[in-house]
Length: 450
Image 1 (cartoon, rainbow, N blue to C red):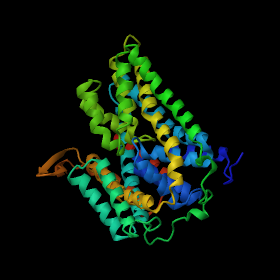
Image 2: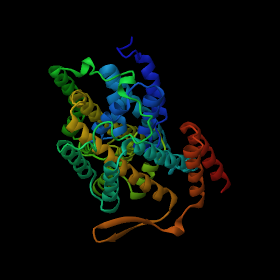
Image 3: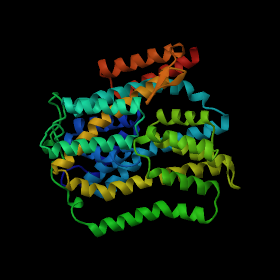
C-alpha cells in the first residue's frame, strides 16, 4: 500500500534499514547519511523540509539524528512509519553494544576488537568532517549565517557555553532579524552557491501538509497518554517495588531523557559524573571505553547509556545472575532513554509542520541550523583531538577554557589512517561503507603487525 507520495511502506522499511546499518559517525555523520539517501538519492523529501525537520529535532532533548529519522518516517507513513524508522535507527546499535558489553565483562576488556575499533575511528573522523562541510555548504549561504556559526563554535569551544543557551540565542537572533524585515535567515537563503539543493516541490513529499498532520487534537492526546504510560509505568513499578539498582537506573535515565539538550557529547559529563561518583556503577576509564564502543558502532552516540546501565546492573544484580541483571539493566536504560523521543516527535511534529510557512519561525529555525554547524564543528575537533592524541590537558585563561593536546602524545598511525580516510571521502569521493570497511581492515592488520 502506498501513500499519496507513491512510496510503499515496504520500500521505506528497506531504506530505513539501510540507513540504520550505515549510521556511523555520530549525529553529524548520521544526518549526512540521511541527507544523502533521502534528499539526494531517493528525492523523497526536499532540502528546506529536511532542514525544517532537523531544526525542530535540534531543539528537543535526546538524539537529534534518531528523532529526525522518526520525524521523516512519520511524515511519510504516519505513526507506524515513525515507529519503524526510529526503532530501526536504534536496533543495530542496541545489538552491537549489548554484544560488546558481554565481551567486556566476560573477558575484562575489549582487546580482541580494539584494533578493529582503532581503524573504525579513523573512518568516523573523516565522516564527521565531511558532514560538517556538507551541511555547512547548504546552511551557511551568507555572511550572517557564517558569522552566527562562528560565534556558536567560539561559544562552545572556548567558553563552554551550554548548548541550550546557544540554540536559544540563535533562535532569538533569527526571530528578531525576520521581524525587523531582514532576509538573512529566510528559508531557502542558506544553501550557498551550490545550486544543487532539491526544491521541496520536486520531491516525492512535495510541499503539501499531510492529512495526518491536520487536526486530531484528541488523537494526539490519546497517543501521548499511551506513550507516557509505556515510558513511566516500568519506572513507577520498579521504584514502588524497591527494585534497587533497576529503580535507580530507570529513574536516572528517565530524568536524563528530558534534559539532554545538545546530543550525546553535551550530556556525557552529566552521565559520567552521576554514574561514576553518585551511583558507583563504573570507573572513569570504563566510561571512556563505553564511549569508544558507541562511537564505532551504528546508531546514536547516546547508546553509551546502555553500556552504563549494563555495568550498573552487572555490579548490583539484586539477586539475579549478574549477566541476566546486566542485560535487563541495559535494555531498561535503552527503553527509558529512547521512548520519550517518540513522544516528542509524534506530539510536536504535527504543529511544527503546520508552521512551516510561518516566516518568523522559519527564520528562527534557520538561525538554529547555522549555529548548529558551529556546534558540530566543535564536536569534530573534540573527537579528533581525543583520537589523535594520547594526552589532552585543559588550559584556562580567564573565561576561556580549552582542551590542549600534548603534541608528544600524537599517535602517528592514527594520524596517517585518518588522513587516508579523509582523502578517500573528500577527494576520491569513495562511499562511506567502503571507507568504513577499508579502515576496519587496516585497523585489524595494524593491530596484528604493531
